[in-house]
Amino acid sequence: MQPSAIPFDEATPDARSGAEIAASIVIPTYNEAKNVPVLVERLREVMGQRSYEIIVVDDDSPDLTWSVANRLGEEDPRVRCHRRIDRKGLGSAIVDGLSLGRGERLVVMDADLQHDPAAIPRLLDALDDADLALGTRYGEGGSTGEWGIVRELMSRGATIFCRVLLGITATDPMSGLFAIRRDLFHELAPRLNPRGFKILMEVLYHTRNRARVAEVDYTFGLRHAGESKLDKAVILDFVLSAFELRSGGLVSRRFLKYCAVGLLGVAVQTIGVYLLNGPLTPPVALATAIAAAMLHNYLLNNIWTFRDRRHREATALLSGLVRFVFVSGFGALINHSVTTNLFQLTGVPMHLTSLAGIAMATAWNFLLNSRITWDFGRKDE
Image (tube, rainbow, N blue to C red; front, side):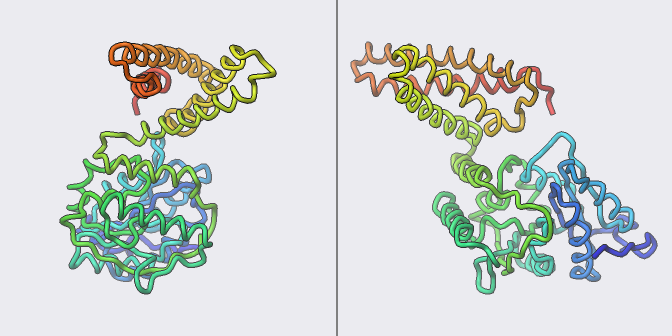
């Protein structure tokens, strides 16, 4: 169902005159061209006479979601689109949209209609007595809808993880549907990590001892059109984001990713030596396994750890690999030097001093690769 056009002279007074807007509804999008018109129409129905605006924050979708949103804005001044050309990611899209919101109350929801638009007025009303209101699938009356058992267990596990690690007591800290007072958001904005997976999780963590939190039950619906963006990488990203948050930012999510890749590289090298030691002489088998591990680490870091800076073209990939090997080579020398010197100075067994060597080399490799391998010649955004 396509939304009906609303003539400019029949639009709400707040949209025409710039008068106070009660609510700003932020919708981050990527390839949601078929969903946005339906969602805008549903919001018109449920919002009634309330004063509101809709802010679509689109990451330059190939399906031209931004163009669809702009056309909707021409029909209804309450709809505006913020097209992001040089930034990507759900977390930063939400923060950007909330920052643009002119309403006294700010709402975040997905574009795929899995978040029930009918819950929006109830979330806004809940802010009469609360600073933050979240849509929950796990409260009395809430439901995850037609989720399979695996996804249900994953979501429940993430909720328990948040409660144990971060001390969050909300029933659904992973919810992507929530409302917040604008003054509270602007107070928290400098502390939020826009690279994070779930902004609500961060907001709940930073306000866990002082904010009044309300919960509104809703049933998680089926995606109207398009494909889900939830995958294993996103889930792992969430876990690492939680650890970064718990450390107070001392240990970055990117560094944790780098360490995880390094551990996988150890496995690649170990398996390589095992398989090649026989067909090849031991020195050649070791050298080949090390080369395979380095290639593995570079490629996985490129597509995951440094995804926002990743090398795409063949020449950039080759140049990046050369720099990565160069930096890692110095890291290996640092590892060897720290391990042997500590062993000679302290008499501590070498397999223990090697842990210090690995730590020093890992820190070196991460810092230098961040600055040289994946930042070389890159223009600041």
